[in-house]
Length: 312
Image (cartoon, rainbow, N blue to C red):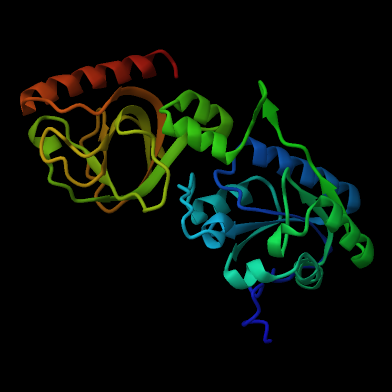
């Protein structure tokens, strides 16, 4: 099998000049639990004089192994790679998880990591398993490591008040509209990313112009409603209010993410915008008239101003 045709053909780093310490996982959200593991990996690597690398699997293995599974991502793959690289690792590699990759044995996978990435140390998170049928648990990987001459260390999870800091816990908090818990577990505000696209511009008509974000499918969203947010455009943050929903007052149509940026009268059309979700103000409501909706938005904006004026 040629390198290009190999299930692990993506695993290559140009100019790799030293042996490596690796960790493998999905790393969706790159949250505090992930950063805890990456901090530990950098420490182990420094002690051994190794380069630090991360392999992030995409799509989520659960979606490949069970077509009925449904997982909403906290971050896009591009955002995940950016956050991983910003964490201080030497390289972050995406690996497309396919049925062919899933069929590899733990020993075959480990041999490829040694050959392609010069792995000498593998740090694994809780409940980690590598290879066909999840055969490569911590005990099995340690035995493979003794045969192939690399170290394996399992790391217990990061917990807080008895709760494991995990992607699933963050998704559950988001689904419940508990923005404070989701942001605390993430270690930063949950954010939505996308280009600004043309909308029907009803917001401008009722006095509150909005930027309509095109959010990729498959990404997690908090419940429909209105949120205090901070919108980032070209590196500048703006106080904002964001509505996530179906505009029930007008047409109850497709899901939209509409951002009203306060005290700004520019045009963001076509620009990439990141919206940090800071606080939930209310759920989605159908109003009897555009005037009633406009009055409620006025109250939402006032509440958002109070939030920012309080120093948040």
